Length: 181
Length: 181
DNA sequence: GTCTATATATGGATAGAC
DNA sequence: GTCTATCCATATATAGAC
Image (cartoon, rainbow over all chains, first blue to last red; front, side, top):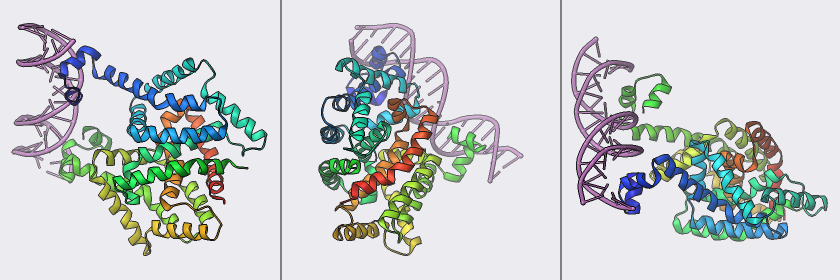
């Protein structure tokens, strides 16, 4: 609370005045960050584009977004680890997306799309769970694990920037190739 | 310190007797976990198997290892985030592997192998950095982000087990397909 | 080596002045 | 609304008995 108050340029007591206690402040922060983490990808994946376009758009958008807010995924993950009740709050944050889009949940939309493409022989069969896990892993992990990755690969800050640029350029093809029949 | 002492069945003061302070205890724990996280994958990737076999072996081994010690990656990552000096300790832990193997660093070995395979037209060209990042992402992220993943995909504990089994079976082909020319 | 007792610092939270 | 002052609990760390 002390550090947050200083960062915000106000007094400790004022935080208690607005948020009552530390837990409620934590909750407010979590909701905001969790929503920001899923809003834009969810909109793309639940939209009307082709599978090919969705992959290219999501990778480009997500890598840029994560480069701007690299701590968001690690924060959300560690929060859910420490406070299991956050899982429900995360679902609520994602549920809002559906309301805004006035359509089906993006997972349902994308799942149908994968099934149709597989039946038509345009891609290999893959479950929605594995597909989302693969795309999320490939986009998010390098930012979550940045310090570990940089240590192992001996990258400084500029090296990591180069790495991210290369990744943005090569990742869509990597994923689409993997799906090719 | 209190919780650790209780878990170990000893007194708080005894921890200070052995480790002097909290920082040194943290360091000792980090070294042990970091080494365990890289020892076996490093051995496989730096070994003499074909690229194809390495991918299959690493995925199988790492998914099993992570299922057994799911907190290890998240712990190492968050430690390096909070204490940048840990990056050096991580490199030392990885450096030990090289000494044990009496050969080149696993990254050097694997890098040459990727270059040779690409020149021979057996795989698409890919940098060692992107390759390692891809394999690590796909194996590790689902365990690091397990609670988030389970929330989004609506998986309970048994559902996650099923997800992991499916992943172990399908991930090698996903990766090898992506590399196919 | 292992414990009890204690010194010291810090964190969350509240009371009350302005 | 915003601050100062303060309460209370807990954390790390040390001293010293056994």
